[in-house]
Image 1: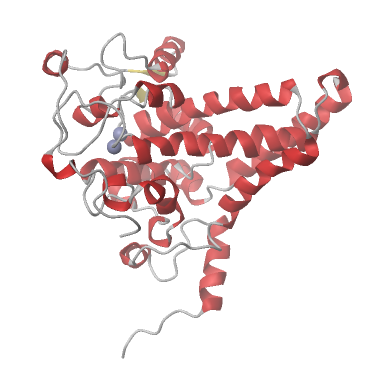
Image 2: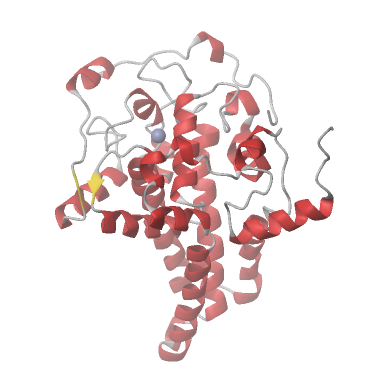
Length: 336
Ligand SMILES: [Zn+2]
Ligand SMILES: [Zn+2]
C-alpha cells in the first residue's frame, strides 16, 4: 500500500510539539532527514519572533546601559559559539570535567543556536562534506541566502543524528539540554526582563526597564549573534584568501575574524581542525583562543591542542588558488 502523506493538521501538531521537544519525530528522524528541503514555517515561528522582537525597540526605546549590555552579551555568547559549541563540542580541541562540560553546555545554550549535539552534528557533517552537494550550508552549492539562513529553517535539518555524536550522546544531561533546547533561551530571556525590572526600581538613573532589556539583551543581541555566526556559513567559503590547499573553498578573512572572534581563519581550520586556535600565526588575531587560554588558567579546561609545526611550515607565507571546481562562485542556488 502506498504511504499516505501526513495531513496538514498532523504536521502542524508535530511542529508545535517540536517547539518544546526537539526530538519529537513521529515519522522517525532518519526519514525526516531524507526529505527534500522545505521551510517549516510553524516550526520556525520562534525564530521569526526572535527577529520581530527587535522592532520592540520602537516602543521600549534605548539607554546606554541596554545597548552596552547587548554588545557585551553578543561577544560573551559569540565566545560560547566559537569556543564552546565549535572548538569543544564539535572538535574536542581541549578537555574539561563532566561538570565543566555541563557548565559550558549551559553557556552555549544561551546563544539560542539550538542544542550542543545538534550544533556539533551539523558542523561535523559540514567538515566531512564541505562544499559538496550534501553540505547543508555551502554557498557554492546552495547560494548565499540558503547557506546563511535558509538551511536552518528546513524541516530535514531539525533532527539531531545522535549516531554522529556518540561521544556526546553518552551524557544524559547533554541529551536533555539538546532535546529541550528551548528551556535555557526562555530562562535567559526571562532573566533579561527581570534584570531590567530590578534596575528600574533600584537604579532608575540607568533609564532602563524590563521590556527594554528584553528587547536589547535578548532579541537584538541574539539576532545579531545569529547573523554574525551565519556569516561563517555564508561567507567564509567565498570571501578572503586561501593559505592551505584543501578540497573545499574555505578562506581566511580578517574581517570575519573580528565579527566572529577568530573564526574567520576558516581555511586554517579546514586544514587542521584539531587545534584549539584558528589563527595559526601570531598576527592572525583569535580572541576565542585568548579567552580559552585564560579559562585554562582557572582550571575549568585544560589540554589545549597546538598546531603541529609541519602544518605551520606548510602554510607559512603561502597563498594558494581555489580548487578548479570553485572557479565559478555559485554553482547553483536554492535548496538541495
Ligand atoms: Zn569546525
Ligand atoms: Zn567551512
